[in-house]
Length: 256
Image 1 (spheres, rainbow, N blue to C red):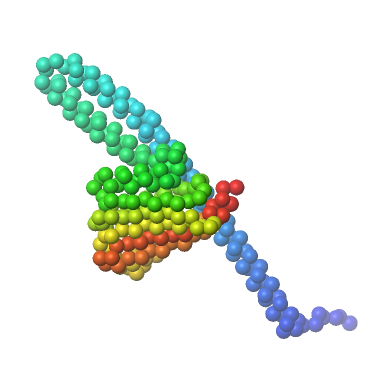
Image 2 (image 1 turned 135 degrees about the horizontal axis):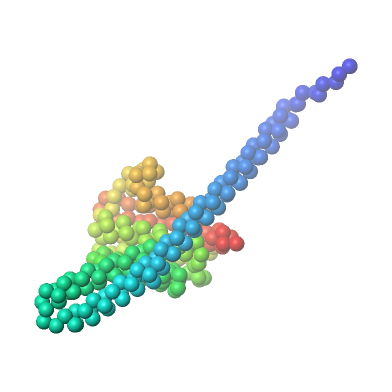
């Protein structure tokens, strides 16, 4: 005579469903953590490649252009009273100088050496001076962190501020902008504000969600990958605010 197992009671079925639900959530959390780790690794590789190319531009092409400029200057000095030769050398010198300047600028934009050598505060002040010198707004940098920001977090904050300020220079028509970095406990607060033309924040966030605004969506994705949150506030004629909060603890653990 066969003995079939007694059917599970309603309470037992509920417990089984709860156990399956917990297991599913654990798998989702594990998959999300693995995705974030992989995405961070990809971003880190991209930054390393930027650093390598920037170094090649500065130490390779930049030094070659400097040597070429020096050689052209010597040829110009030896040209004597030959106006055709002297004019050609002067034209070549001007082209070489302009190309050297553009190469150095591209190298700094790819990966400013000051970020690795002197840290985040120095790099942000350099960025503000550079953008202001190119006809941009006055940019004030306020930096108040009790510990040195390093690793991925340093790069992330610089890229967020760089993207936000680039948008200010290109589109806002602002006279003044502020970059404020403040450490609050185990979090780092980042604010970029400008007094420019502003925009409809709902439309801008919608475009970012649809993938039409690469700058804003890129900033938000990077911030979220590091466990932070990004807010964008703006209104027509009311300027813009890009604000994000980034956990320092999450960043330190990612470097282990």
